[in-house]
Length: 328
Ligand code: SF4
Image 1: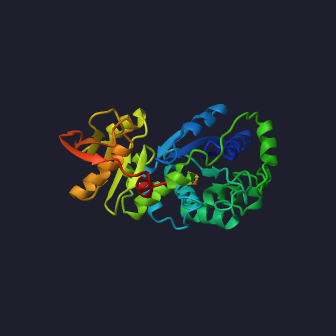
Image 2: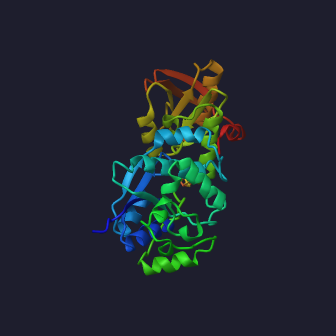
Image 3: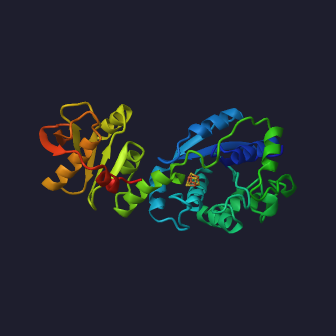
């Protein structure tokens, strides 16, 4: 009996990854879509997309390796803090490591030659392949007819003529295929990746520049407003009650601040050194600025890990000064 070959499909939930899965499935391959999760890109969209096309999605967390890669991506960043070439390379490498455990013969990805300026030029596809260390097991079904043959083609597991020759930035061919496969909704492929967001990238760059790039700090980045006070100190201020709740969950031994006389935002100070009195006063006056119902001069309670055992009287910081500290 003819062997049924099995492949992993790198699956973002974008249209191209859905098409790659359905195309290979229509040719009789056993396709296993896999999503690699990081703090920057959760599986929500991919899970919906996989369900829409009738597949189960395997979700694998690669946070630790991704953060390490982010510190110094070999092929640099895109428009924001998105290291797309290295990121794809890492995901493929991780897929390669899992092949044996899942009894998989090769790996597919929905990349289309020349579609995106940074990550899908021919040289970028080669770079992704090299970084992945599984270059020869990689098939891009949507463009493979235009690419060099890899092992699955040379070995006859896949016929080159069954592969497609999509290329360039136009989306007409993909739309036609989507219609043929009955796809009625899809997400933007990078949509939802925080690394492509300008404001988020600025906050992340601040962590990188201050040698604070670790998982805990990264998970805090999409909560509240972030202010860089100096080399060693930043403060995060909740924007609303939901932020305050999320900040609550984050607190361990950091200094926490809140206005004494009125309900207001929580402030968490992230500092590598003990705060000097002038620094404490500065962050307290910043926090008071966001305590809308408080008078211009008021008391701020503070203490380590919610003890709020101390108080300091300050005046609201001027808006121009607040703007200088805001990371945006
Ligand atoms: S958009 Fe985000 S998840 Fe996608 S390749 Fe780029 S960095 Fe990775």
